[in-house]
Length: 264
Image (cartoon, rainbow, N blue to C red):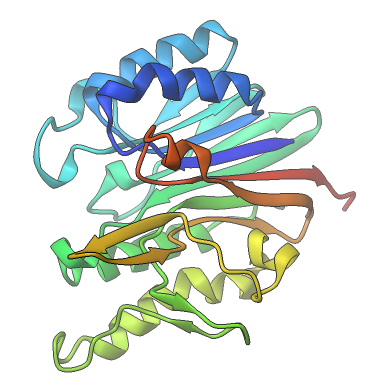
C-alpha cells in the first residue's frame, strides 16, 4: 500500500498541478489538508474519474469560504470506504476526518487531521488536540494510520526528545497543558501502539522539515507533517517529497508511506 498525506495550502492556482502529481504518484490512499471550497469539487471530480472513492470532513456546500474554518480535509482511496467515522465533541469538525477502508479482508482505519496553529488560535490549538486524541483512542480497529499537518513539534533532538510550542510567561497558566497537549500526538500515541513511521525507520539523527518560515530573513524549518502507523502494519518506507514545495505546488512538502498488513 502507498499513502500520501499533504497539506495543499488552499492554492487554487496550483490545483491542476496538484491533481497531476497525485495521479502520477499512483497512491492507494490520499489524505489532503487545507482544501478550500473552490478546489474541493475540482479535485474530487477528477480523482473519482480515476476510480478513487472519497470522504470529506465537511460537505463542500457547508464549508466556510472565509476565516479560520475555510479549510477542509479529504481522504481518497482505491479501496472501498466502508464508512466515515464522525468525530465526537469536536469544535473544528472540518479539521478531523476518519474512515474505514477495506482492502480484501483487512479493514484499515485512516485518520487525518489539521491541527490549528497556536500562533493565530491560542489555546484553541490544544483544545483541538485534546478532542482529536479522545477520538483517536476511542477505536478498536486493529490496523490504523493517523496522519496530517499537526503544527508541532517546534524542534526535535537527536536523542528523541522534542520541544513543543509551550512558552512560559507568554501563555501564563497554560504552559503545562500546552506542553502535555502537543505530546499527546507526538508521544502518547505510542501507548496504543501507533508510532511515528518516519522516525521509526530513520531514527532521530536525520533532520527533515516539511514547512519553512521566513522571519525577516531568518529561515527555520519545521517537521509539522506526520504519518503514524499501528504496529500491526509493516512500514517499508516513509519519506518526504520536497519537490512539491520547491515547485510551489504548496508551501508544504508531502509525506509518503509504503506499508503492508501484518498477519495478526
